[in-house]
Image 1 (cartoon, rainbow, N blue to C red):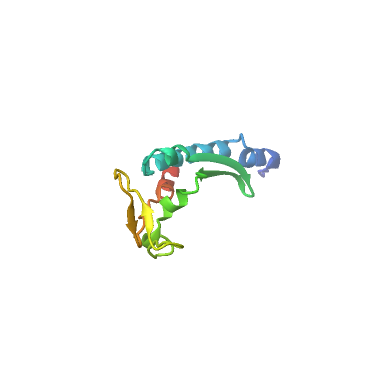
Image 2: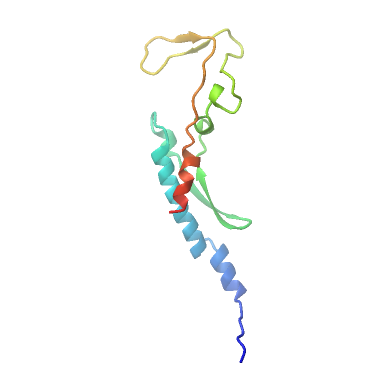
Amino acid sequence: MGVTHRLDQAALNAMLRSPSGPVARDILRRGRRVQAQAKRLCPVDDGLLRSKIDVEMYAGPQGPTARIGTNLDYAEAVHEGTGIYGPKGTPIRPKRKRFLVFTPRGASEPVFVRQVKGMRPRPFLKDALPAARG
């Protein structure tokens, strides 16, 4: 007496690769958990960065894939840090003039400086990844 197994390849592919299949639904659910945690960890100034953290599903070469992130140009600087705290590890200095000029939050007068240290990294997306485990 033998046991015969027959694998339904079409059903297996539908389960694993279909954008509406159980695997895609699970990936989306996990992506939303990471998104929610990233929004909790995201530093807030005016709230724009936090509001622009999105989950996007797409069909990757290995099957359904979730991308959690934002398209704001300054998000990478917030996440990775700038100046001495960032990837280059050097202070921020003016490129064409002698001084950097900016008005700090809460101040009424501009400040003139030759360099600034930069901003420490706030890796809100990377730190949110464990939320995918649930």
